[in-house]
Image 1 (cartoon, helix red, strand yellow):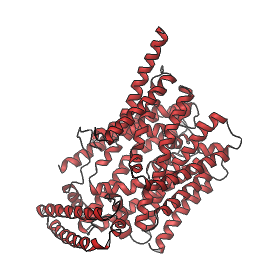
Image 2: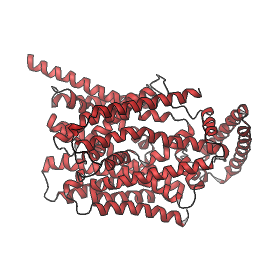
Image 3: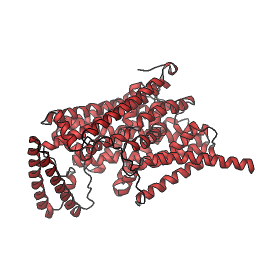
Image 4: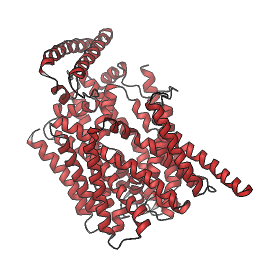
Length: 549
Length: 37
């Protein structure tokens, strides 16, 4: 990477971190927990979006549209509906009792055991997820930059720990606005340059993308095994977003940091309005990349670090496949320019076959070969085709996204540990500021530890991908009962929560051993519905015992 | 931009706006998809 890129990269990161630390110096303990209550609508709205948008959003999403189509957008259709429900019911309930964490509300509504159980589910799922939000981008960045993976994890992790410990939730809130603006600006510049490099007009590019299947956005299939459909997006996405926005402390902390109910609500609505268009724009970048690579020779396999691991004896065979790929690509390009779609499709199939052979050869000869290369599509374009300086800016964007989501989570984990466990068992500490900082530090180090351990457990990464959905359904079910079914008490909800969680685990097990085929978004629906149904059943069972017992 | 009093805001109007935007997006995406099926 050029010196100018390093300068832009380090300068942008230093400016964001420095700003966060400067703006939040001399904060009181309460502000470390929930922010300073004077942040604006823009800070709340952009903060909520920045916590949600992890680095992998910007690395994976364009790759997804490049390799498949734009169907992933359906995952976000439930979010605007969830925003409305959270704004109308959850936020007023939290603000009425001046809650710092979402779980405090459960003690007031049910009992302490339910509060501790739900907070424990949150700490478990987000504790692991915080590690993966560092690990996932670090693996891509280290491969792309040729740096050691562990070094990359430690660099990203320590930056996050430094400013989250120094400024707590308030530092997260003020830096996220600038991180999100850097991210949006950087992606906008990348899109502009991409359009500039495509040799055909935009209507022609649109037609090429459409004819090659990239503009499939809505899938109305009723098959529950299909991951992204209109129905799984609306129903599963609604439950997932409702749980995430309404009960995940990393989100709750953002909007409870607002000075009043209106600002909290507008911050959420901001998210509801801009989320789908933002994800659509990122997917469009993937489609533009696809069109760009119809006219510019793409690598057969985008993760070059895996190709470099191939032993010398297969290099000649790989080079032969590479030559064949280049010839087929040139022929396809010619066919595309004269509009001969029959020839384009024939060459397209040949190219796909050559790629399969290439990957099979690597798989046979490279130990632990990773076949999935979609995460490397966007970063390969950035590193190879953007001008000097902008490469550094785009890398700053990706690292900023990793930092903003991890910082949001680490800060929420520390807040929940302090408010829902420390103060419950030990009472308010006179040196609370020091304790909160220590907890933030320890959760940050734990996240770095999970990230460093991730490569050792191949299944861990897969598990963490569905982790949110594994726990969120149960947590949401508990909150739905708390808000909407007033007669149900603590004993019934705790037992329903345990049963709901076991049912979700059992479904996941059946999915893993391929007895059933279920998109993971449906876990959110199953968990919530089971908890609500079981809470009602336990409630009537216990009441019967009281009446007849 | 901060708004001081939540009770004077007609939230229903904003919620309908968010739903209308989502419906418009889904309809637009549906027609884009249909073009090349």
